[in-house]
Image (cartoon, rainbow, N blue to C red; front, side):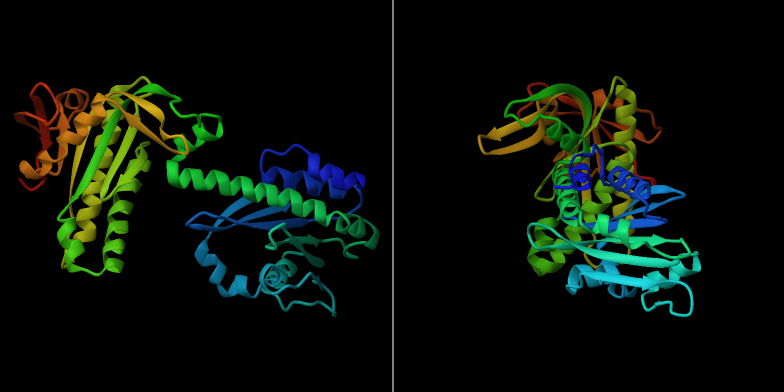
Length: 382
């Protein structure tokens, strides 16, 4: 193995952007007059289609998370990257300046307008047969010299191995984030994956549930039910994330989430209540004019919970358990009984302010030994 290939396989790099930056600067050192370098990594993220990584001599590395819709745009379908990844092309080389300029690709015309003189794209094949590409561009008057270009070309197999590793790392991290949430994913990746491992935390606890979902499921075909459920979850998840909360799981049409206090319980409760108001408002806006409007109930509590791994030997769940979780789950059904959209315990109410918060009296919750004082949010039009 040559020295450059060994370097590609072993150079420390925290992420693919840092790696591309190091590679571009190393290539400049052995005489390749790079102005721009890029690559793309396919993802296993439901929203992000390709991780595009760019390096320029002026700005260094930039990483873009391109939506899946970007893979069907005319620009991508007519790009060298698409030709490399999907059409089996191994190399594309274009002159960008002078009377013999080859500007059939939109990206070549774009780079030519920015002063580029030569463009090159190589295919890289991963171990599973999938492909990506490495593109190079220069502003040097004579384009790329053959000797340094040949030196980099000889390292393409090593480069494919390194980029495949980055792609696998991103896939692992993004899938864990999608299915577990950001905080739980970080904990699992840092080593908290043993059954029973976890920690006790103080947090505001949220659970919400849909009203009338069973009837909707009976009246509508499954594809419409799934679309409605996704719309509901979107309007719940976005305000939770915006307020610094973490969705732990979807339980049918219910959502369990926490807002860790980090030493400030009042702040955690305020954020949870802000998220609840946002979710209710978002669902109401989505409902406008719909023949089958959805209704929801949100219950809020605060307390100490165990946050970690529970389950069987081969199937774990990263979640929260404890008395406060049981209590908030028992509180939520009262939303229907009391015709309320947001309910909270007295402990939660003591940590938030609001002129529209009303005392709804004491209620006996199933499985809770003593009556619980319950507070609600007065509707805006009452």
